[in-house]
Image (cartoon, rainbow, N blue to C red; front, side, top):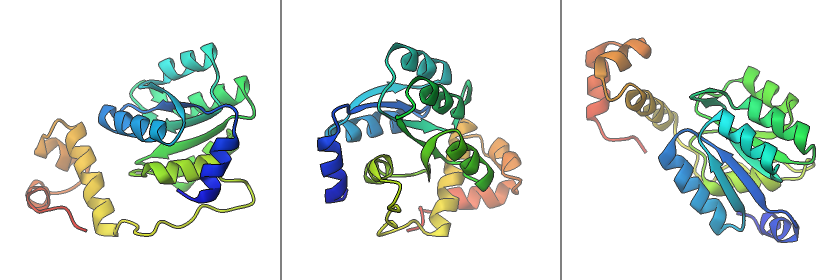
Length: 186
């Protein structure tokens, strides 16, 4: 985290942060990490719960997953911007593409980050001023690692069913088995 970002957060009177993410382990890790960086975190795991929480008390900051079990995270961003126009929201997604990034920014998100993003990337995006760009990561993941992470995510979503995962990835089952048997690339 940059010194400027730390100074920006300490000067901010409202440090409330809403995290809407349906991946429970990631939600817990990110919540703890953001609390340790000075935010007051409220976490939700669905669109409905996120919108309900915004209705109770709209936070100053939000981190929202794009694809949630009960809908689209952009609905949460839109509700937040209606309730609190000055709120800073970012969209996190494992399914990034240009069209959804443009839509997210048009709906009021200040940034759009691809998963897996670490807490420092999230803080930098939340606190970045419009005149400065986010810094490039020091050690970005290799293309092989990004591919491996995507395959692992789909594999877990399919309840570790190799045949179903291969079908969804449009990949031969034996090829997928070979990939899953190997260690994660660096």
